[in-house]
Image 1 (tube, helix red, strand yellow):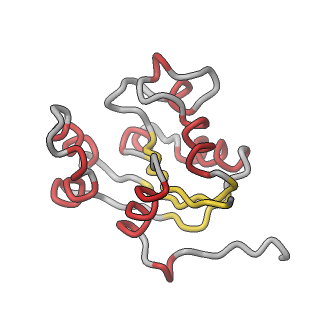
Image 2 (image 1 turned 120 degrees about the vertical axis):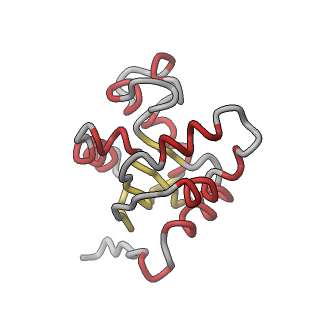
Length: 144
């Protein structure tokens, strides 16, 4: 089943000039980009997006990090996109990530791990709608 997922190239990815390399990895894995933009979250917008983590001890550090610089939300599409994307990015902790994954290649720590990925279809739907309106999603027509 073709699915959509949200990726966010986090502020550390942007700061380290890795946007192109990470997007290349997505394309090499046959993900189709159907929406992408550069945004700057503030603590309020980061807090709304990560509200699910509000009671976790890392919540305020996460908000501080995600509002520390620009990030790039991207909507990706592929068969089993959510599961496949999570394989490509690797474990949250880069020390535990598989070789060749984005986090193993580029992340410095569990807290600054280059990329966010949706973890379930419901989450992906919410997260995509947080950053993009339906008119911003470009439908891929493989016939062209």
